[in-house]
Length: 151
Image (cartoon, rainbow, N blue to C red):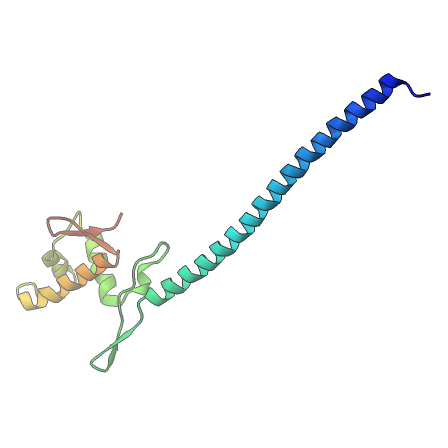
């Protein structure tokens, strides 16, 4: 004959194990649901990264046509990009700004890159190039109109 106390212990332990199994099954279902959500999030993220890469490529400046001639557009500065992407005259402008002891006016840059600064018509194209470099992130323009390199 079986000991009633032993049977009671076995029954109690079986009840504990059944409850633990139920808890673990619930946890397992939650873990699987979260893994499924992560898989979906990963697919969405991969799709978004691909779309952003395509958009960046489409926004990247490309050589354009002006008057039947191919002209080089100034690319936006991106992390890790260097000045070799720029046409020679723009590299000279950045070098002139860099050589100065501090922020410079367009006239001072013109003197360094050998533009006739006494004629306003020759200075304005230089000022336009400086502003273009500012717009593309290569230089910084201070509120007083002087130019400096980006930090």
